[in-house]
Amino acid sequence: MKLAIALCVIVSVFFGSQLVEANEVKILDVTAKREIGFFGDSYLFVVTLEHNDEDWNHFADRWEVWTPDGKILLDTRSLAHPHVEEQPFTRSLSGVEIPEGVSQVLVRAHDLVHGDSPHTFLFTLPEHE
Image 1 (cartoon, rainbow, N blue to C red):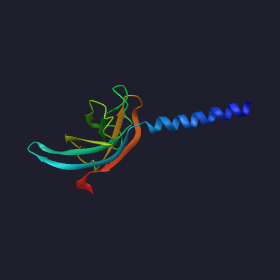
Image 2 (cartoon, one colour):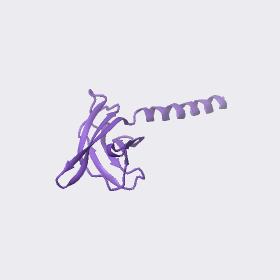
Image 3 (cartoon, one colour):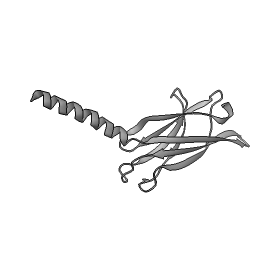
Image 4 (cartoon, rainbow, N blue to C red):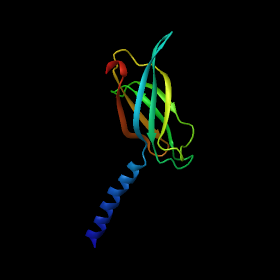
């Protein structure tokens, strides 16, 4: 009997963690285009996300551009509403300034229930490919 209970606990912990991960926001694609401006160069980022948005209490609410070392937050694209009927979905953010010497960035996503997703996307900037 104790073995059966222990087995049930192990199975529920394992499958429970799989269900939580399955509900976290995933980054499916990232593109970026360098924009030449009067006051300097910046980038237009286009990011495609997938998330099991349920309602106003559980949806992907933002994605962010970071340096690979995770120390400098470069910019944030807020998502103002759930995308229940639109999955996956793509949103853009222009004017992202990248510090000198940075050739790659991390894109990170967030949802209201799980917080920061462990799924990140390492992206090499176009001028450095």
